[in-house]
Length: 153
Image: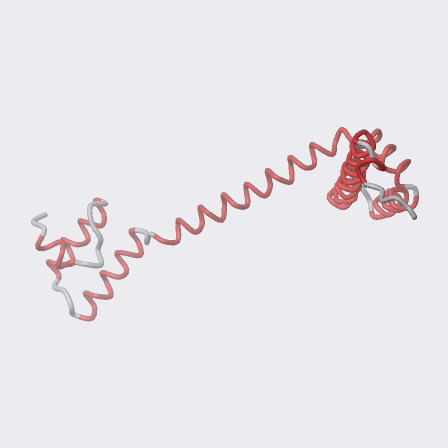
């Protein structure tokens, strides 16, 4: 009869450590490989043939290709990544500014609305003049002339 064997006896602690180390190095290798591939496509200064050559080199001879790429072009990888993030931040800031600006109507928009209201006959010339003064002074909205007349300004 065979005696039962236990995994703990067959696979000692140091072997577990080395297996985990190899596994994590393997994961890090793929992360580096994919970052280099992304960097190849991100570089606008490189021609299409240059990108194709580096990509073929990195894919066909991965260890040598990655090491040569890091030595030859690794210094600018960080610069390109920083430039990409700064461009994304500028685009986001611009979007936020445009969105925030679109929410508040300008004085010209307020005055145009007041003119339409006066043209329809909903407010008198005196109410229009008071609301216009409020809009131009920046103290109130010209779209609600009744609020301007009751506020005592």
